[in-house]
Image 1: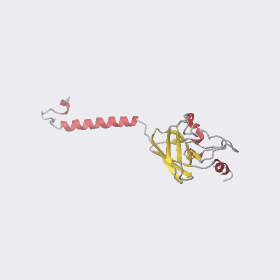
Image 2: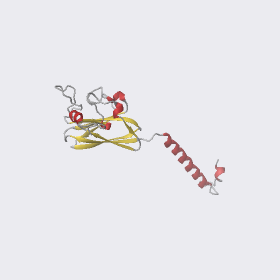
Image 3: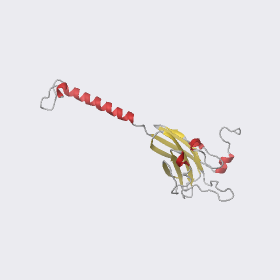
Image 4: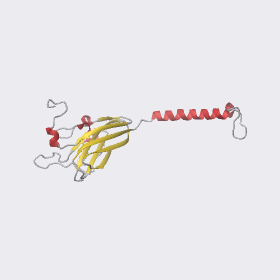
Length: 189
């Protein structure tokens, strides 16, 4: 096999430049294999969720990242055994806003829910009376999606995450302020 690259001289060197040729072939082989392996691997993405509207420095900001509609409706109670999400972040609350970062994500469609959990009970607190079930704490979703009664659909809140970095903005507000503010595309704007 070494004859193709020159004759072995016993001192560990090939004569007539064969060692240089062998090294060049090995470098080319490794580069080709490395490139082939890298091409077969999907590139990972980073998602940055810039959150505004945090009411105070009290508590935590809870962020749930969902990769499918199956887990989308489980995230108003992070403390529940039924809670499911692709990934979560719990950030110390800072008046005004915070940023959650998710690294190493496969590119694809995701949806995000954010809760300003001022009382640190790890759930979205709701009114018992007179507006039964209406959220008390500030919250938001990717695409700033919402609906008056219930949670918006995964489809309405989903975003495309691609490599290397995707950045979205989520504005937290109360259910009442969401209901009273003009919606995008409405005649009131």
